Image (cartoon, rainbow, N blue to C red):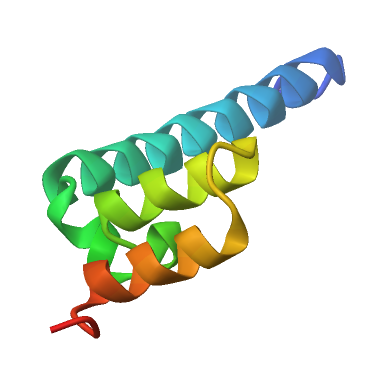
Length: 83
């Protein structure tokens, strides 16, 4: 007798194996992000390639603290077009 009595054993084994591989994959993703660090974020275009100053300026424009003309002038200065 090979122990084929109940389907619960197979179900438990299937669920356990799925959870095991999910944890392995999540561990690899976490490790890659941890080892990659913040330096890779700008290289891959996260934040649209904007500098911190451009992001702050865009937030001020979105909140209505500055008008469109002021936004464009300051953005050009940040990008180096106003030299």
